[in-house]
Length: 437
Ligand code: HAM
Image 1 (spheres, protein in one colour):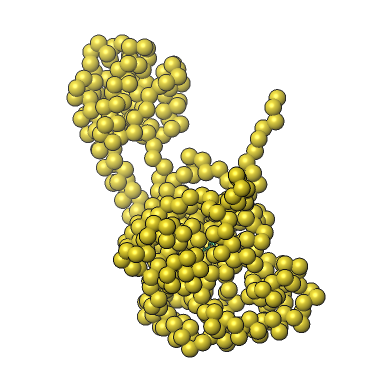
Image 2 (cartoon, protein in one colour):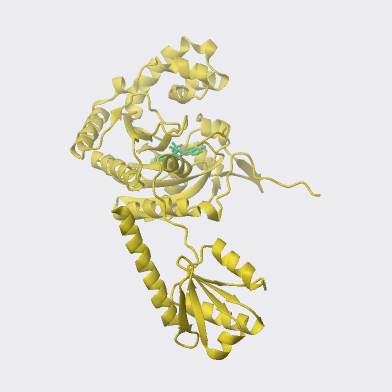
């Protein structure tokens, strides 16, 4: 027998059994983003590798260790490790920044990072994210954080802590880099090879190295908040005032530096302790230099992304509600070839009214058909045989009560079925209300 091929390590299949969970997050995320005025953007799965070198940054773990790149016909491409770089590239390429500012877009996409897989950390994962370009005022930071918080609340999530920090601008960063270099130089021997090379080029990257030794050394490193220039410091204070005014609880965590190079000023993360070590469900911040770095006019911008797998893990661990999977309204069980023709026509009539109709396509006996109808959770079953075809009368069986409802399978069939289905839905609502009492 041929060897079975399995999916690559760090990837997951999303099967129909749990697609309702994904629909729940995607639906609520879309609705929330739209009610803040964001519109959807869809971008390519791969980009020119240079895009990520120039945005995410050459000294980041993502670029140095985690990118999936291929050379095809002399050009190097990379599967997107995140959505911000591609989104900004698309905004520039489509002239969106010449339109009314701020531009506000959201995306739902897959990302690829060659990391060591563990719970909540995959090699292919999905993000819901958004970007706002053109606004430098701290009210934009407050609005974006408020959107993330609103979405987490609407998903029914509890105990998610918001941590914020400011990592300044290139102006304050130069003093800070000096202090960091002086600090890490004292520990240079013990740093990992990657961090040794970061010491000169970009010492801030040492602060989020995943090696436990580097992390231990980084614990006592100087913090950026002590080096902010007046403009960055005022921006941060104003954001904190706004969050307080909106009653959004937060903690200032001067250790947050984020793993991507483009950030300036505000950075933030929403974190849960309910899903183990990979508890950051949302990460984001401001990146006022990126658009210019990618060839546009200087334009401030900011955004965030949430890991959908991590959101789902947290929702499951907190028993949050999910939308139900759609199930079959009517299953038609024909007993012979003539009835099968009729079943095809009746199913189409019912579908044209927006109901889900299925019928036997396996030429199975009636017992096997009833078993199948039960398994797929059909609400009603209609058995069709010679008698039914001749008389034009059939029985609609309501599966939850076993009740048999006579229906005309001629031209009135459709309306009779819909009436029964609506009664059924009414019953379910009444039952649900009774249970709530
Ligand atoms: P990030 O922090 O690298 O930021 O990723 C955002 C979120 O994606 C994380 O908080 C986490 O929930 C999820 N995530 C990241 N890596 C993995 C993984 N290997 N497996 C599962 N989930 C993961 C960004 O990507 C920025 N582009 C966010 C942003 C948008 N900043 C401004 N705008």
